[in-house]
Length: 211
Image (cartoon, rainbow, N blue to C red; front, side, top):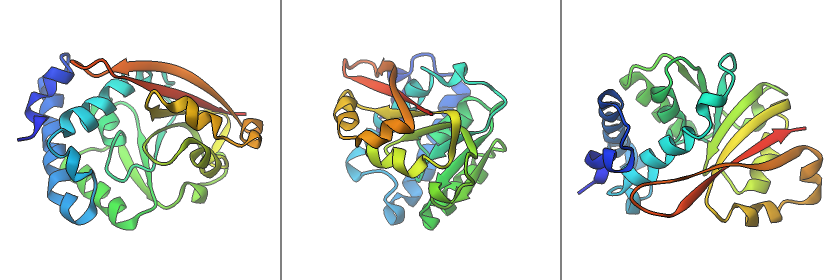
């Protein structure tokens, strides 16, 4: 039995509208998961906590602080987390889902259509295929280890642009694995942390600023 119907256990402030939309999105993910492996089978029953609450609570630590005039690029958003959660949570902002897997990009288009979202679009390609400096604000959850992610997105993010990355408390290990030349192009800082109720495990949001 899934914990998706217990979302308020993890997100007490969740509105009835968002709760219904999240449950609908879960049903869409479940429908296509068998052929696309969108989420691990081991997390199907705990998706409410591990995907929905994690995405929402992480977003709430920084989303309202971002300048509203810029599109927000979700890098590697094959299963829609956190990009679709962000678009549902803040309909006033515009989001771009960057996904190189064509089948998953098509899934994203289907989910966007079924959820009737008009503030989100899909870029079906690698982040390296975006125009140089096209992105000023970005988000990412589970796309790649930090060193590879920063190398792949370097050209797409303009000078002064920021990418907010969801990481576990072990993020410093990934930072330690970055080759020295990474820091010629990026400044990497801890931005914020969050805990998913009722557990005590802490998660981190890392802010990477393009130099």
